[in-house]
Length: 332
View 1: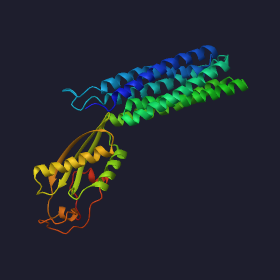
View 2 (view 1 turned 135 degrees about the vertical axis):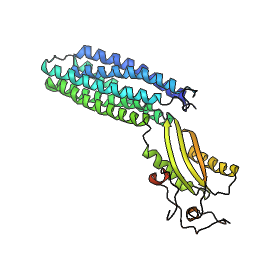
View 3 (view 1 turned 60 degrees about the vertical axis):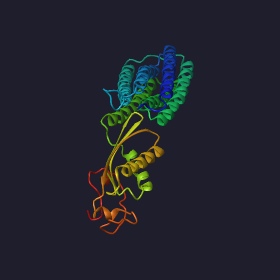
View 4 (view 1 turned 180 degrees about the vertical axis):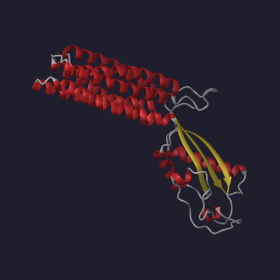
């Protein structure tokens, strides 16, 4: 199953690559004009933008490939690998920036033509912010980790570039040379924090770490809309591969339903999830027959001719009880 609207994500990433190349050129020009180490650090980070832009483009194209015998769940996780690579490069760029800034503190280089440099760098900051916001917006709609990471990287670049502009303005007004290196070191710290966040998020995805926020959303929908025939649900598992949502669970229904009737309950569950969550969806649902009298206490079905115990109330599903491998019931 392919990621949704993949041509759109690929198109956006192409624009990211093209924009990164143009902005990198402008920053190199600004460094040539100013000889500022702060501007150099901004240009160094832009090399990361260029490299990761091409990497992200490749990963989106690969993620769009249909599943095959070697990849039965599709190729969606390549986006996580791409995003983690981007996060690592951001961390490395931050360390290089710190190193260059310390060297400049010891052996200061005089800056020049600050007015032209400030103007060029300010332009790159504005463009980065707009393109980054676009990436994040499309990435959220298309559930693309790679595109979302690219957008966050571009916006982090915006804030560090803005900080550099402020530093250059202060340097222009005061003439204090160490401001150049100080601003660069501060910018490096902000860059590395964003890089860490991206790496942490992608490791969680690669290792199939439980997404508690998504689980809570799904459980809330299930609690609100569950029909009387859904006596219980347990062993719920949700993982994401790119834009594809995989949901596994055990659904307890009345034991006297035939195969077709039990399958109709799975169809209801399928439609409920699809209507409330804009992912491509794969479900593997195991149906269990109810176990009187324990199940009777949580079964609200009226007119059950085989009821063995009085109905006491429905169980409110939570992350703790719906993900456990245990059927639920009052007093059980």
